[in-house]
Image 1 (cartoon, one colour):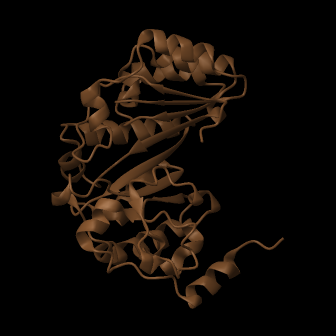
Image 2 (tube, rainbow, N blue to C red; image 1 turned 60 degrees about the vertical axis):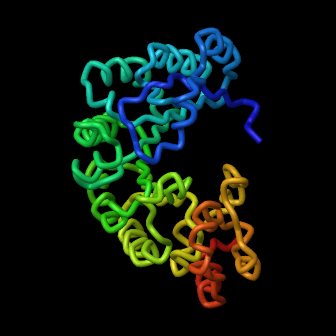
Image 3 (cartoon, one colour; image 1 turned 90 degrees about the vertical axis):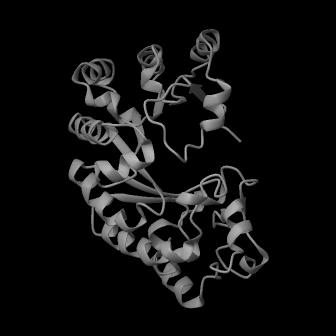
Length: 297
């Protein structure tokens, strides 16, 4: 259930990337972005000390973007902005954004993405030339200007061996959170799918690396049994809320797992194709390690 103090702005259907696994493809085709009248109504409903979520498409391409930022600031609302960060590589654009928010940065969080450690790998996913350089320049400029942000990598067969490389790259810019997401809609993106068994070989390595850095880790749609020895790094109570329970599944073999209620499960289409043989209840040994890591009251 959404917070009644939250206003969500779906600003535009336009995007300067064309990510092959984009979960908004259907939205983009249907052109269901907010109309000018809808934006106006939502702006009027922004509550004092409330929450504003801004996304698209790529919201920074909308002529209404800065105006909404300005109006949210007037209400002291916390802003969560989903952007590929390419617009922020422009000095003029960033200067205008800073002008509107320079005394308000602690109320803004920017969610971005990077799907490769090199231009070749990243742009294999975005299908957009120069998207790697513009995104990384955007990260660098935003962090230098003092904004908090996360960077998300959707795991595919082309980048899962490079998660450590991606982490090292974004760590150079001072990114606050590294988010690693299991790809959704397996059947539509079968040529990109990586198996959970393969991810089991790579995820513990990057988790260990992130744990040594100042960055936080966030896992999305990845079953806990992929990295059971490191539960303490990523298993949080808020994971009990699953974004779309119809999209994920937890087969009967998961029922004995002590983390079954908290675990996000696995993409339903992935489970239908692979059969769930890779899923395994968390062992008592790993649970004891997890409990020992919990803060004592």
